[in-house]
Image 1 (cartoon, helix red, strand yellow):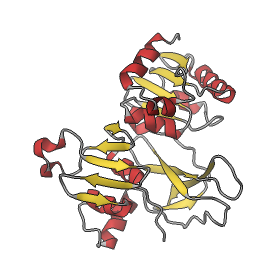
Image 2 (tube, rainbow, N blue to C red):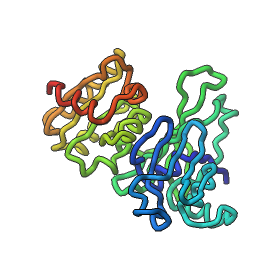
Image 3 (cartoon, helix red, strand yellow):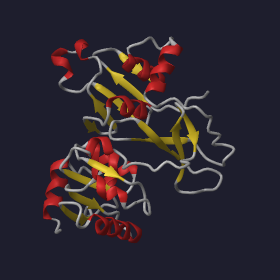
Image 4 (cartoon, one colour):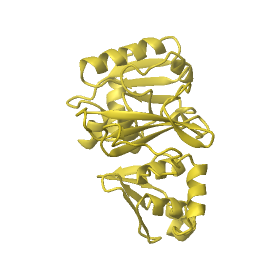
Length: 274
């Protein structure tokens, strides 16, 4: 049994979406509010995905993904059985070693966990650095099956990424790709995605029936075609649908990196025609 853990994936799998973002760091409220003044109203648990470390200064918690899992679970990091049980219960324990080198892949740099509306793990997408093939993007799917991760999706139909965060929201922002959905969520947007271009299925439209939907198109031909196909699928089901691009940015993640705030984005959306 092997582990393929990242601090960000551990935090999202246990605590949901981050409360906010500060520079390169995502912030969550500490899972131990009793240790904080005012119950950690101002989130103290910080994760830096680039360095793959976490810090909760008031608690003194810090380290890599294993230490974060132990910290959230409230067990000692040396208690391997307890930490592994917690990881397994949260769908974060890798049940099958992924041989990236044999597949000609580089280092796994991101894990996107897909859950159902009740936050139960369904599948996850692994993103790798360019490997021997020299691809710009390289992904692999794993499905949650028999209390462990199995290679490939099999017969699994993935839900919308972040469905648990938007299922009860009247307004939803759809992006192209998980990185953009994560970026939107980090600034407070109810963001979700079906994945990359060509990933949309007609049954996704039913999940968004009656909602106001803004589709953010990537600023390229494939992105614009994808956004229009999604809009056509939602027509007559969603309460309203509009498509827009963020001026001067290739996608939502880049816009947020360039300083676009939630308020500025909402203003952009309000000006977009249906």
